[in-house]
Length: 435
Ligand code: NAD
Image: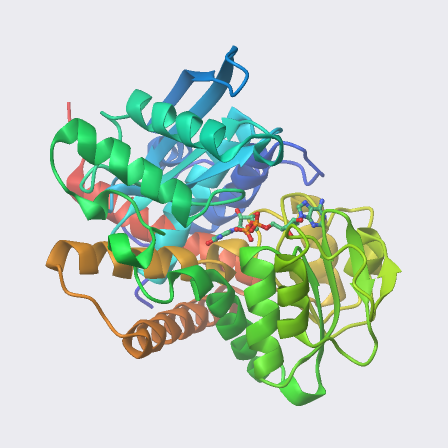
């Protein structure tokens, strides 16, 4: 097996961390890392290197608000690792984002890029703000000042941002404009998830949801399930959740439950997902009040009697408290970190096939890579080419992880970490430590 690791001296490891629920996503990352590191017999020095973020930038962002007051915001950019290439990762605007969360998200980007075989390292950014209470002008000034503060960090060969929760193509357009005005250079490859007219890629908006669809179908095939006979519940109806629901519905699955931050919606006959999307887009991105649905809570959604569960909202949704009640046979993690390490063990014992975040939602960074390639070539691909290559890369990644899980007798999550860590560690060994 290409991933089998014989190159390191046998080393003494600390035992994997005690299995627990955690509200600290970075610890959740380390808990999974520990299990894989033990399987790989990872050198202790490599262990320390690979769990440590390479750089953490914390920046104060002054913004003149519409009423003339100056308000200070805190922003982060964490570069976790650059061994395989320039670092890559989205920027999240959220009132409760914190540096611990951004560290975890940056590390997950490193492993994600390694699994789908794109030549990037991992990074993530965040700004503590509530975009729903800010005007477009305030958001623009915030975005531009965040970008200007991090001008030396970003760059097409250094660190490449992208959208994440509450950020979108417009925000990427302000980032590219600020960067290009300051560097006196038009360099569209410095950010991905841009509007098409500014060098964005066709298919990028749908890419993460499309990747979720692809791995879900692969997982169904492994379990002998047919999409036409399968019911699906999707938590979160933003970019990832709504597109995953739409595409799975297009493949014949019955989407019986969806939810957003306001609550859950159930229809045993299956939703018309296009109609849900239209309703949300005319209702301030909310499904609240959708007529053809029974209201349920987000907790109820997670434990519904469905075949497939797609958590596509945020971290720490499936915990030791609700994992025993999960009835789905497959969980495809559209969100980053929706399952806690304690829940992992429970789901594994129940025989639930969990397609982990670092594999399931890697479609976004894959098409971001395509966008970066197209920008650098100045040659743009058709949607057919983007989707075909995305599907191929997701299928290959799923199969590699599935084979590794059988080889090591471990769940897909551990197999994903084993493959990713092995790849980055092998590259580190070749590059060596610069002294
Ligand atoms: P988004 O902002 O477009 O949508 C988030 C959705 O989740 C919204 O419908 C929101 O109402 C809902 N939500 C928020 N809190 C909730 C809660 N407590 N319960 C139920 N629903 C809740 O964000 P997105 O881009 O779709 O990202 C969702 C997740 O997917 C995040 O974890 C993100 O990091 C991850 N992800 C996104 C991408 C991408 O390309 N957008 C790529 C990889 C991973």
